[in-house]
Length: 89
Image (cartoon, rainbow, N blue to C red; front, side, top):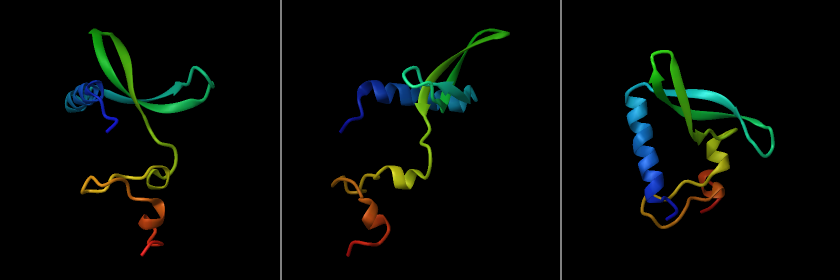
């Protein structure tokens, strides 16, 4: 599986940030392309009037069910798009 210990730690920090309402959705710019994309950012309160934003997740553009194949519940791989659409018997 490609989920690393670092991924799990970041996810746990994000869960805490959501619980504390220290999460924002921001337009950010991709360095390599200049494209503006929506990111989920955690808020680090540095002082009463100052905050730091920590980018942690990019939202998928479009219908997520058509962009990715979700894992099978039994762990045997991923559900292909054709199966989701009922094209496989």
